[in-house]
Amino acid sequence: MAHTQAVEELVREFLMFRGLSTTARSLETELRMDRDRGLRVDRLLEQLNATVAAHDLAGLRDLWSHLDSYIFNKLENHFAPVIKKFENGLLKYYLVTAVNAGKMEKVSEFLTKMAPELQLQSEWRDWFMLPYVCKPDENPIYSVYFTRQWQDTYLVSLHNFLATIFQCIPQPTLSSYETEAVLVKKLQEENFKLKERIVTLESSNNQGHQSRLTQHTEKSNAPTPLIDDFYIIPTENTEGAIREAKGLRGLIRQMGGSPVLGKKQMRSLSQN
Image (tube, rainbow, N blue to C red; front, side, top):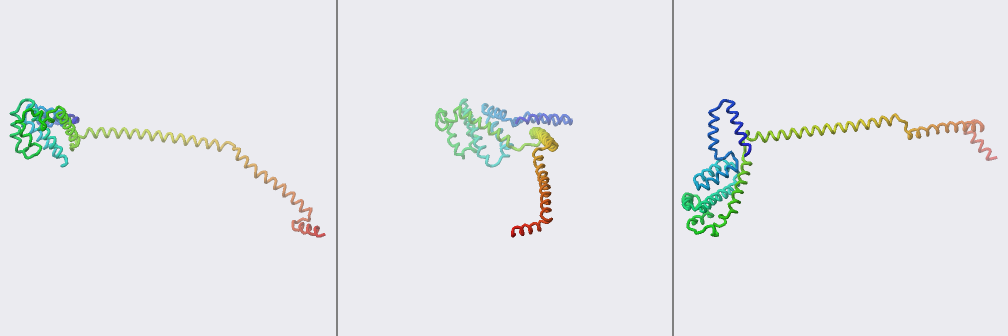
């Protein structure tokens, strides 16, 4: 993984700062013997290919056993069939490489040493006949494994599988510091943008409120024609009522001083 090297540099710096020179030298020695290659998939595949090309069966088995003990065993059980499939593919890739190189003694050595482990597996039953088959690359049982397409597909699939596994396995706290630092920085930037947006919205709202308040004040101070029209109505009614009351009092005086009396007089006149 990309950040592993950065973490190793931090550990070296800390050890030298603390004066732990013996521990620092031990770290360097173990790193030179690191079979995980810093958990970098490309370097790990280079090492696997190197052992296959050198027909180093012991080295190949040792490296895969190391991956199985320190990496694959940390996975859930449902990964076991996939891991076994990749292991068998690697062993077949080893045999095909040996046959193509004309190293039939390496093929016989492989089958002799691996027989106790493989002979009970059905998919390996035909492979024990490999040393006795002429032109195995043309035989229907083995031909697909001798194609460049199968070999390239296997290596690409193994690369992707290992890359995925290395991303999923639990990481020590020190290895996650960079990821957490990036996350914290991102959250801080988003928080700052939100604050700026809030300030902008508040400023816009304050300006709008002040504008509405100013317009309301101006309207309150100016004469409104609608109010003047309704103000005239009760004034005119009052003046008319006064004139009507004065005329009514004059009529009553002429008729004898009382509305009731006036009505009686009006009935007497009508009877006569």
